[in-house]
Image (cartoon, rainbow, N blue to C red; front, side, top):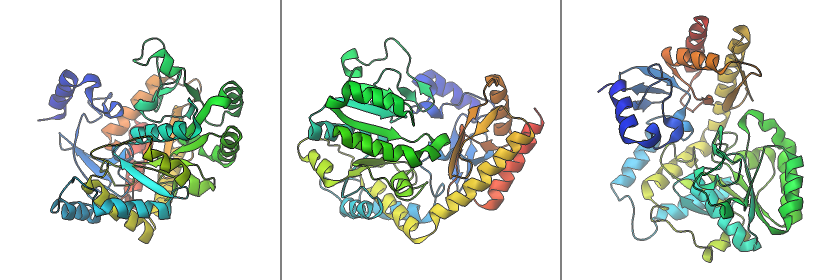
Length: 403
């Protein structure tokens, strides 16, 4: 079966064409409708075409596809069992490791997705503070896209009108933009006496603002007695092992890690200071698969590798090589996009002011056709080597020359 067959099947039987909205291919036939296999930093589609991959499953692949030591750990645990009626020893071992590597973590628990872990932190914040209102900065998962004007997807605001969210619930959530202190001051004046939490995900294209914005948020939440919750779903295990809280040196009350921590296995961690985490003795959050052992085995091995090898340094070096090289191509060929934070393991581009979005589509189609899989930018993983980056840049330059 080829890409065309699966594209038709996905469109016929799955709303949106995928269970993950951002994975639905919109630029076929150049963009692959499905991926059949991956190894290291490369993937193959149903037509057998290979791509140098910078999507990395939208972030979870931090070490590389089919990364040997992690896969071996999963296989070893598979022989013992997948999930039990009591905690696996791995649950205690990984929780302990989390408290050793993440600055805010005095205690930790596990779920499967980042969005539900954010929701858990919000519940704890409401329990401890006795307050109801929540300010959200950035995209924190579909489950938490409740405020009017909140991001329904990473680059897509929710539509006005009926969205499946009762107005009474939406009224308790308030969207603010990254580094918009003026808006936050307005929200503080309006809801500060009943503010439970501020949840923040970094704007990856403008992360340098975090040097001043994170200290501001720490002071802002302390002023109102609210919890400061970091969404480290993307930044954890990339910007630094302990995420932006380690990188910028500003510690939140609670934080969520997911993408990257188990190299593709479904696992999220919600962790924080004991004062807030102990709320879960009464503010109940429970899931049968929270302590599923295959994902915990993967996470244990991933953490071991990060602590024994220079994974973070490699991601920074390859990120600078890739996104710095992409920036040079953009400038030389006057492409209709601009990169953000080109020296980082992850980088995302935006449309240049006044640029035609149709030109961006043509550019992306050409890049896919050349055998490079991108997102709106993307990620490097530990398996990307200098020769892979250089080959990808050569393919991209060859593609944009044709436009």
